[in-house]
Length: 351
Image 1 (tube, rainbow, N blue to C red):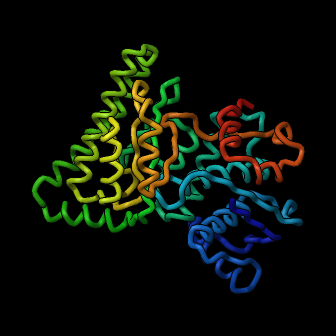
Image 2 (image 1 turned 60 degrees about the vertical axis):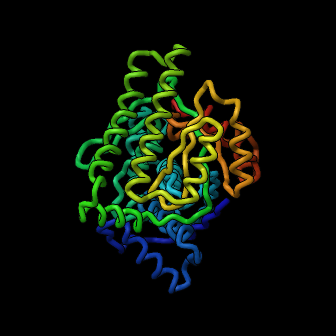
Image 3 (image 1 turned 90 degrees about the vertical axis):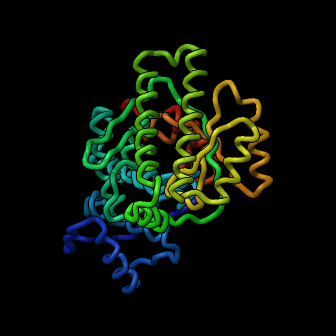
């Protein structure tokens, strides 16, 4: 759990050319003892986002008493799973509602468009020049395809989801180093590297097209078609990991996960930038018998496992927290995360 306290702060005289400039402003306030920044870079980034949204979206007359924000998450931070986008999207929606910029009367599409816009600005605070695909995926859910200089494509949720185990290797990743390494091998024209990068692109498109066609033809409603679908997904995952390994972004900790998964009949691949971080294990619908075994094996090897689903709904808004508990803040801070997740999955707003 992470708590943020915002006192009466004003940026009326500060014109921000870019949302990321709020960091300089926050450091200034910290030096003047008007706010206290945490030592952790991740927590400081969270403060910058909160301060940016607070100063941008909360009217002056509502800042007299300050505000307290409580955040809880089951997403590992800094592991390539989009934790910053999840935070940016959630906190943007809260500030937008509290500041009167979205309401129950607005259509769902209109609310999500506004939230996504501010979530992207919040991501700019943290990352400078993000692609926008992470916050888009968090807000809209479903399956998303992103290619540079092209608009984001989204397949809305229609009953097709896939179960995965996220495995945290507990090995810190360095995305920048991985990207630079691949770029260097690409620029040197090392044998096979460009071909494998093209393969990764083709695999991603094959995955998106497979999901799209399965939904469009309603074939996911047939057990035999679903089993065939899962088999194709597992095959794409294996090919993808082979290509990623070839271009040098895997790691022995990730390979351990892949071998353990394979031993139990599952396909796995790294996620994010590689070089550590997390891996994904695909759990087909007709192969769930070994799920406990593979998790026990991984945890006995020092890994941390999270069972999750891909292709589910995105951001949900609960405008009536008191319907769950009279003292919402105490309940929110103490409730098991799985209870919060269940509520989130059941309360997608149709306000």
